[in-house]
Amino acid sequence: MPEKLYTPQTIEAKWQKLWHESGMDIANGDAADTRETYYCLEMFPYPSGNLHMGHVRNYCLGDAVARYKRMQGFNVLHPIGWDAFGLPAENAAIKHGKPPAEWTYANIEQMSVQLKRLGLSYDWSREIATCKPEYYRWEQWLFTKLMEKGLAYRKEAEVNWCEPCHTVLANEQVEDGVCWRCDTPVHKKNLAQWFIKITDYADELLNDLDQLKGWPDKVVGMQRNWIGKSSGAEVSFQIEDSDEVLDIFTTRPDTLMGVTYMAVAAAHPLAIKAAENNAELAAFLEECSMISTKEADVATMEKKGMPLGVNAIHPVTGELVPVWVANFVLMSYGTGAVMSVPAHDERDYDFAKKYSLNIKQVITNAAGDADVSEAAFTDAGVLINSGEFDGLKSNKAKKAMTYWLNTNNKGEERTQFRLRDWLVSRQRYWGTPIPVIHCDDCGTVAVPEADLPVVLPEHLQPTGGASPLADCEEFVNTTCPTCGKAAKRETDTFDTFMESSWYMNRYTSVNCDTAMLDANSMAKWSPVDQYIGGVEHAVLHLLYARFYHRLMRDVGLFDGEKVGSEPFKNLLTQGMVLLDGTKMSKSKGNTVDPKDHY
Ligand code: ANZ
Ligand code: ZN
Image 1 (cartoon, rainbow, N blue to C red):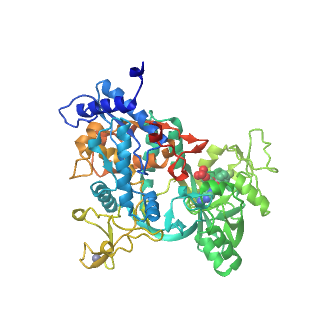
Image 2: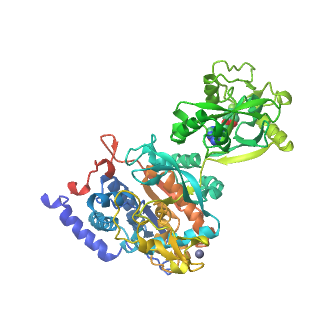
Image 3: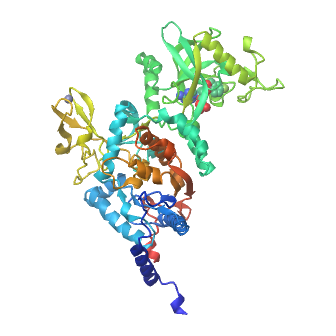
């Protein structure tokens, strides 16, 4: 019965035409349409050139959901677009000698054809390409609002620098100390960078995870760890024969009486000062600065340190404890310094053994026979060798110790987050220009709303070194919006996670050219009922999108009461498509193109 065979060339063409003519894919934004709405979204693709089977799986899942909901009578929003800025376009541009814009637009063209051929039921009238000024102008606008609110700021920061790529790398882009892209060892460098204060929202982003009943527990857990809230105390140790104070953060104030040395990060001011007249120490600090400070690496690398030749005074006993510099102390966490309690912390224990430092036990178990001669005893327990605190259980002792420190002006309760502010500037060409002008007299000035967007010139040719944007005089040279004198544009562009952090909201309002969002459209469609995408985005993309949604709420773009604070109600994370056990990706060159199987 050959006529019953599935022949895509005829069957798909026939039905796709009918679907298209019926307009069934179009989401109806009219207020008059009172059908219940349903918003189904798949993570939008990077226009790399061709669809691969990973895309196909992702998009077929979304398509099935969207069709099912339409059949149930919902007014369905199922949009598609392009996460169109980013490094691969620059790399391709270098390889083929064509501007990234040309490559990107050609790929969008080709992939649109492929998506359409698959018969996926998208509302193409809402297509977004993030590299278009009508999209990124609103990102620039929001950034200037954040500058006004003090939520966006510029600061010198130690960054991971890759010389061949001539760019700053995110920690996640450093794999085993080398650049993810070119395998060159990464080194530290200080640069003025733009940040967004996600840390102001850390508590809210953490607490609201409890609302996400429709998310996989695993993803919620990963977000929770990433935000990483720790409760403890900050304790001040006076430095001997000096006015200086060494502040530390600890989650175990109950172990305070067991401190036998202090450890500071290589970049800590106390270490830098001590190295001024100690060449050996200076060399060690230099060595530390070359090494990755990714937490995972810090946890496994060999512990090394040197004494600074300085003592701290124990705040309770007045005893002197030596201050060391240690390669496992991160400058970017807490105060960049720790009180070391080798009897009850494994890391401190190994370090104390290696350098023959004292080990003093101050916690024991219920039976009173915990022993630290072979290893640290890291559990909570009962205090011993702790004077007036003896006999208290760890939990009570934490409170008692913190209270004592507080009343004696030597410390206080403190909460610490692992989450850092979001570094959003990149020294790249193919991205959204940061809407800022540098004036010799007025400093850093936001581009006024009336002058937005700052349009990225699309004809520039990257060569592999510094960004061609920085060399483009017609872009760089401008006048100061405040004083009118000659001034220079910022030539850094945004991290491309910026564009993907708010596209889900823009889909509700694609045709709105007077604001980033239309409040009514947001109220109609948002939050996304079902979000579908790769589990590799479980942390950063989803966290940034949750954050951005709140930023948009807090500049008054939509009513938080009506829309809610979470952009994605339900989340489906599919695993990665593997080929012979390896992730299928364009960069690995092992993708399977659906057209080869059509
Ligand atoms: C003394 C102590 C005794 C500690 C003990 C632990 C166990 P989380 O849970 O990740 O917040 N620490 C603080 N700042 C640090 C830094 N910049 N780099 C490396 N380590 C740092 O970990 C908090 C604990 O990590 C703190 O509590 C501190 O060591 C260490 F039995 O203080 B603790
Ligand atoms: Zn000026």
